[in-house]
Length: 504
Image 1 (cartoon, rainbow, N blue to C red):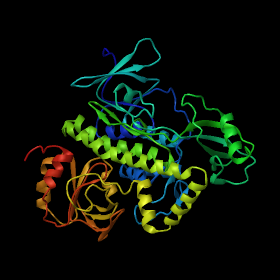
Image 2 (cartoon, rainbow, N blue to C red):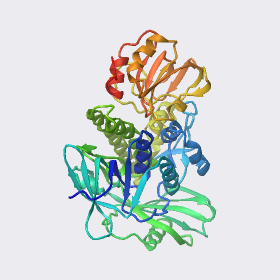
Image 3 (tube, helix red, strand yellow):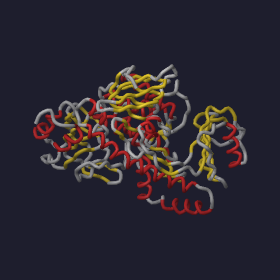
Image 4 (cartoon, rainbow, N blue to C red):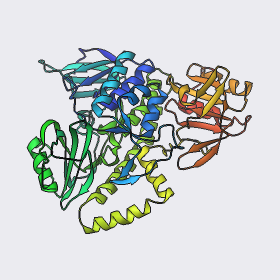
């Protein structure tokens, strides 16, 4: 492919939530990024319907959460395969899911991307990739004669489960095939007298109907042992017929806004990085959408990758930092595939599954069981494999209240700029300042006092407020110490996650 297009540090394929979140993270760090999207316009389809606690924390850590809260509605309920979970308000400032449609999420993220200067090119589909030692040439089909080429240092595929980037990069996508078919659509149901039908189990599967706004319902039907070809068109009539088979009526269904289909196929990219090509979101993993984890995991992929890729592009960290993206996020994806397979099995119709659901439900009355399942769905319990045995090491940092010389603040507010933060809570003074001096261009040193003596950490319990901690730009703890004078391991952590010091 010849170079005939616009240069960028990073090209992102796909303008969904994952691609837009990644673009925002890269621009925040000063990286030139172009998003290419094969669709001419946003679909306007509602699709995914919510954001979990960790995703809300991610948005809070960048100072943009309020616009999402204003557009959605918090719901103090969650579920595991339709079995209700209880939430613990002590685990996060944002313990409850936010009901907000994917179309709204995409609109808000695209507005944020525009504020940061992100370029989004629509009607541009990736059709070729050519990597070399200095970059990657990305061929684009724009509907005009001949392929256009963009030259970038890196390409990130955020282009969905049928990712062209993944296929062109030759990355395997192993997993398990579909065993059922689900149809989903936003329609009017004038004969349904309830505003809320929650996973009503039937002989061949189940259905639900939830009123997202007056007069309109999100209808989902799931039929097991009925698998259709993935290229078969999805129609409103198929949704109507499926509801009739399961519910015995279509409730007068009419006026579809959109109709789509999904299944319980579960596949994961064998690797999230192939040279200068990386994958995130559905391009890296697909699964049964039980528990609403897909969109959330994609946004969190982007949050993990963005600062690392920016550090490498800007020459502040070695390229090997990108290997930690696969090392940290691939196990998270594998765990989600595992729990969604379990949820799909629990949802199957029949007396065996009914009995299993009853036993499983009886276990969920125990706090420890609830906490374990809740941690998986919300992603609050994730611990990345960083060096150090401190109980906070690798975990997302709690959003503790702080007293600083400049006034009251919160830990998550310190991360709005997308930079690493060395938080001195124990009066380390000159010793801490000396330790971080070589990284002053990329690490903010903040002296503060914690308002609380103990910090709640999901899957761990209450942890004494540390004397000092290094917080990565994605809000995970890279290093922590309980003694004000204990700085062992700090320089190694700074080098690992922030790159070599400017001077020793």
